[in-house]
Image 1 (tube, rainbow, N blue to C red):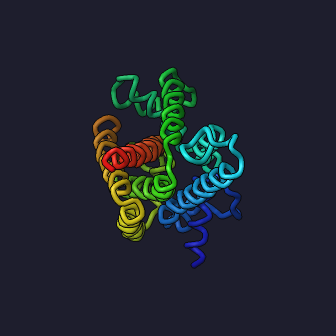
Image 2: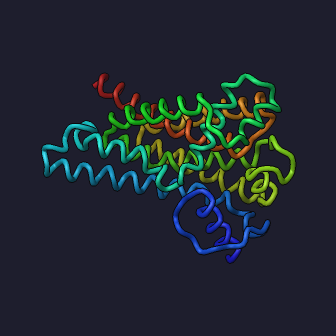
Length: 272
């Protein structure tokens, strides 16, 4: 029980800005951290749903707030929804997304791409990608409905479940002890983590389909397609997974699942 509690604290202290009691980063304490990584997504999903509901409540009482999210909120609340994951995680996954965009856009040999991932300086492609990412996310969230918001709230756990599976199951791009993902992977009780994350994957996929029906199914299919591309990209361009690549996948998975949900919602509305 103590090991589980320590792994929980490490997972949240590493992948979120939520204050946690201090815990020593030993192999034993880190061994189950991936089991608790998706629960950071549960916090993000809950916060997003509460903010969306609050926006609807305010819009019902003030007509001046009815110009943003169709039927409920304004542009401020739309942008707030986009930023909630950044507030909670501190941008750790976005950092990986930007580093990966720089590396992929360099068209350099594999060794050089891995060096670019470790470079603390942001290149032009990272800045461009960041701008496009947030503009696209704002556009997607401007089309949110209450039904879509439920599915997207669950998707934050699913993206982290798949990201955790990649850390446990994919080959490591860096040598033993080099990089945070390699450290977590080496410390992990892989069989327990893998089984736990697979259970999460099955339960969350089923839950999204039950809650969202066609929209939920579209999100799950999109997540699996992005995961397939991510595996291919990691192996072919980097020789395995790194922390930055796992962050890249998580960010891409979340925005594309949200896109799949809102597009499917619009298709269903047209078919009615």
